[in-house]
Amino acid sequence: MKASMVLSLIGCLVVPSGAHILGRCVVAQKLKQGGLDYFEGYSLENWVCLAYFESKFNPTAVYENPHRGYTGYGLFQIRNNEWCGHGKSLCAVQCSALLNPNLQKTIECVKRIVKGKDGMGSWPTWSHFCQYSDTLARWLDGCKL
Image (cartoon, rainbow, N blue to C red; front, side, top):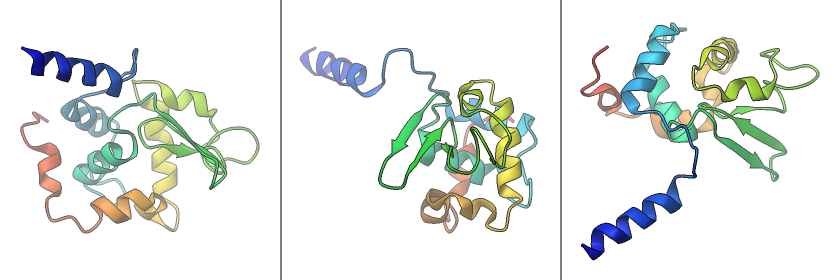
């Protein structure tokens, strides 16, 4: 009884109130519907892996990185210093539009990013956690796609 209360308390502390955490299979379905499965040669497993390591499947995540001079927005932590926001941005979208759980603007933006010279390498987390993983298939395990 006490252990379950402690776990419940920890759960409240870890996930902020009002967070829009999506399930792994929901993310996979939305990304597939958005045309990301094998877009520019990258499998759906790669995209789901990236979404997990960037935002833990939270499409409303905002992370400020003052050391690198940018803020990341949404499921894929799209950076305001080159990909969204005012001025010359690759995606020509306001960063706040990337915080919508329907993921439409997010998917449009990542398609533009991945077409660049670095492909998914534009995200260092993909290069570190997903690119050479021999367990990518696990990201779709049990999902009915």
